[in-house]
Image (cartoon, rainbow, N blue to C red):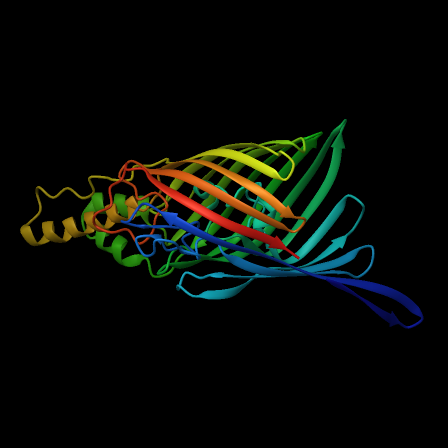
Length: 399
């Protein structure tokens, strides 16, 4: 729905157009893994599996967006979503809130809260209706604990022959909720994204980095440093109190209207115990009228060991050996939280009305290498390397 507001300044008359829209997803998921809970993002924890046979909190959310066009150059947007929080309840998040200035037909500037353009579907992944799948591939899209930043960006559109380019440079900061107990600040976020389109094909490349500061992470690493040179080396390698995080991604989207093929790969390197991982996926589908079946394969790997020997215990006195053994267990527990996983998926989208899409998806998920993959609330009986199934049914709407 929209409304038109007319306002005046002196003798000048101008019209501002306001448009209010909304979106939502209602979905249920069932996981055959009863020793952990399947979730899309650790900051929005789902309960499918161990906690509940069928869970509605894995994918369900609602959102509203207000767009304002003040004149040919000035516009603004505010978007809020209602979704599961890391504390277990639903809460409202301000996802976008920025003002845009169209300096020239090709150059635009924005300031405020802006979606980080790290991956192909980063701008719209919370709007389920905009996705061909029931959910964006978890292996890649769960890697980033933040989806927006407070700052500025500049986008410039240009051409080389028949190829259309758009280059975006972003600067900002954000709060990073790494898990239920660890919260940090992402400072000095700097990113550049290049998109190139020709016909049905769009290519996208992103490089970004930030300084991640996490207070309260000192206990484990201070304990390691008490064990001399070997402890110092381990602490220096894995301490995440203050680290540069680097993100690189490349992807493509080929869409003829009937056939669509999407592929993407991204690496997130924290240089610490929080992980260095690469995720990739390839997805293809075909639209038969209002039905669109699709298949996806996604893989998440760790570019670092997920288990290490840790501190040497042989030459330590019994009391010191006990303390060192505890630190080794704590270190390896955290390393096991670094996801290693692959997922094969099939699904179908049915556009039953212009603004309503019904979706069904079946996933075969396999955590590997001693890792828990992307599961949460993992129980003692969990076995890495054991495949499990996820069945999801959902409805996406926009209005």
